[in-house]
Image 1 (cartoon, rainbow, N blue to C red):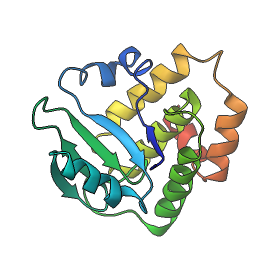
Image 2: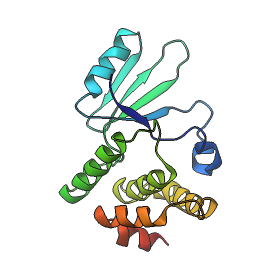
Image 3: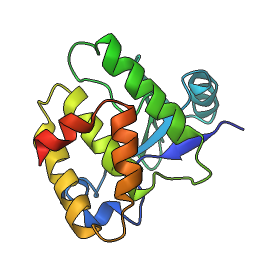
Image 4: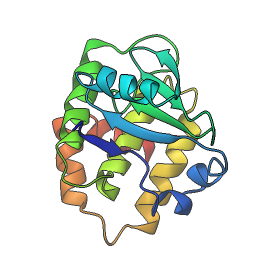
Length: 168
């Protein structure tokens, strides 16, 4: 069994406008351990799925009948152009491993918020407006139910807290 975690919780994603506009015909984003992703890709390939490699960022597997694509991400964030610096790479790797240890099959609201902050600062900022919108919507819609202590502590540990404050 390969541990995975759904990056976009199906119950939460429709409430965020940036996810809503991708809902029809969208892919499913799943975080997978880099050590186990190839085994999962091979499983899908043997089931008849088409496989596209975008290493080291992700693998896309597409069902030939339904055309549903599953993006198997090896990290919670990776730039569309270029590469991560050593500091960002270490922080993202650390947070990705933490997420994979979860007992839930999806990211909590707090971890989704942290992931969106990280994605904004590490994905070249060329797609940053969508992440800023998600950070704003998650922060405002769930303000009273979010564990701000956990979010602050985790962002400080990953050295992203000052970047989060810059978004506010």
